[in-house]
Length: 303
Image (cartoon, rainbow, N blue to C red):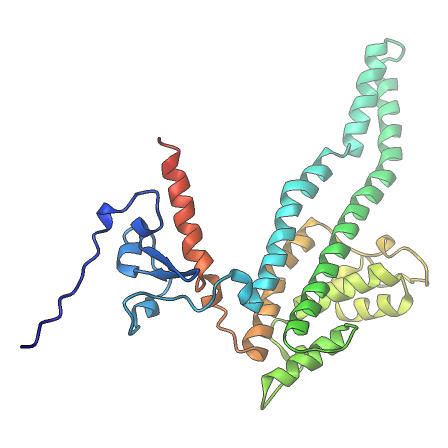
């Protein structure tokens, strides 16, 4: 006599509300298995395709965010963006401006009782003029130092990534990066210069190169390709002259790089490494686990 198979329905209400299982995540062999019907009661489902499966539970394609190469770049940029917001922007805002120097000098002159208001105004104006040059130098230096370090880390991420993918040489250049990714594209491979989003990366690279070398060659490349990054492209530039004396680099430009440079790296990963860059935003164990952790922590605050 054949016995009928009975479907076992898990009663999640019996689970501890502070456990992963309560939210539909069941851990097995250090992997997260997702009961999407239960999980969906608490969180939005990132993509409908996770319902098209043959198994009871959904097993994400990757374990960690950085298992996707595109997320290596995204996370690098995100880290630097947060450092900029939390530290550098605040530090720059704390630097005394020429207008503040003027007002401090004017106020102190009046309070001392030695100078009348008109004399105090002149003293304040002189302090403002003196402060202007130093203030601009300090601000530009902070922009330049941060941006140089940011692009150095971008290079380091590129080198680290292609090393994991089989690159054997002990040095890295942008050209080597381009050649390596071309070999991964297969038929109809193209160079970076033909990528839709190459411009943001190339401009940032040229700015960094000019900051690094302070040379006519680096200046000419930047001026010819991205003249908007030069204060006055008609001016002459000499070897050894500070790049900051002619380079236009400010917070708006830095934030634009944060917002758009990953468009290029997404294209690198999509074309060269065949990654699904949309899935990379959610299709890994840690994404689901982190959502549950945050929900548990939020609920814990009420007890």
